[in-house]
Image (cartoon, rainbow, N blue to C red; front, side):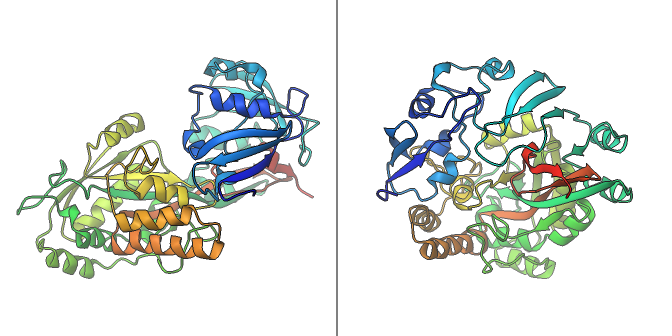
Length: 438
């Protein structure tokens, strides 16, 4: 690190194209328009990129950005020879699928299979296999059947309900890992009149923090994990799981307490409860529609009149972005190992100019929280950063109940005997992590 706002970055030594990565590649990539996947939030802090030599970059940010390297780890650099206009078709036919990873593009049959071949000059550990075929089998039962029949070696996204049956087979094994994918309830605490919540006295009960805290106390997270998720979810009361930067023992998993919830409702002026409709997708998260029904039933047991409306994810996310809902089931995946980006995007005030609140679809806003996260994001002192994140987490999830965390999803794989899989909490299945058992 040359300066709090300037850092050096060495490039990978060898691309699939057969030459070393060069500074031209990065600079051209930063000038490209819309790619099939946007990385705008990952590079938003960068003010300029200069080259010290072909393999070393000097990156200057608008402000101190300690987690810049983690953010850049999600940005895939392409050769400058490809130019600045690249389409999805260029990736599908292999023209633009040139990187520095352990596998080269072999071929792609849409909605059927992707073929990869080993990259002999890969800078890291050599791939364990000469080629890999990734088949796309969207049907859960079809994936499980293909594994049991021996048609495939590894499957991911194993349905929680199928785990016991798969584990009973001697030639197949299960690997599970708690991910950074948080499933939560978002609450409209911003508007005085919200479309799907009503009380006899009028107004929006969700604006009262005591009501939001009461809703959290109504929920039996362990029951949801055990009965709805078949034990394949990790209950939580905060944004990231233990082991991630930003997790704190100051925010334990809330325990269900319907009586305390009723007392808070009465204190807030709603002794007889109120009416609420829960919205959410029915095909995006693991058992999402069932989770909604379970939450609604728990709300009803605590004295609310609660209904559910689940819908396909493409319809749901469009409506959620337009703030059509009062309370909805959402999810956010942390892949960098740090809570900072999630706190900035899910809970911080929606401010396009500052680059915060991009996924804050309920427009929760708390200046004290915003200030804590902003300071943490600029701190190079780990102890100071951790303390600031702990304060921000307590503020968001205990004092303000900005959202109601439910659990972290577990990623589940099944693989045939004789293989090992190095599972990571990043919601990705990487061929490089599959190797023969020793």
